[in-house]
Image: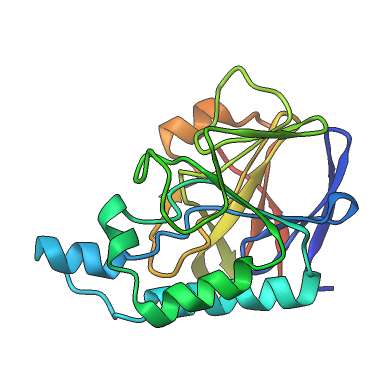
Length: 220
């Protein structure tokens, strides 16, 4: 089985290999840190050059999860655009593609630190969102319970076949769930970084993304 099912608070959730989170009972697909327009922003700043197809790769991944799961609601957990200018620079074809994916669904944009306000692409724009016992926000609150967030782009390292492999991952304990970045070329923060050590409990696990969503013990 390519996905990882697990209980969290009062919900039964599924970590997808893509980095998306599926809540079957509520018909909710949550994704975090799409970072549309990252390559354009870096080109603007002339600090780096990335392949110009990051939007298409992210949209392809999102389209696949939507076609397979047919969610009624999509929650984007912040930093969906790399900055506010990226909204205006969104290619017309990519804009149409995104609009088609949004059609007929409730689409919630959670505000992130890269785009702190509404973006002109439709949907509902919120600082955070609550569904049943779960609270969805961009950046984890250390005092929160039953929280789903993003922001940190977590990744972890495992040893396999004599090699050390780094993969984006979900971080999970009994209080919070931190999603990996869903967007292409987004980089990541190691799971043993001090800020993640402070947030996650000793019994945390990581769920690796890739071909399979694979749970592994998390060494903090």
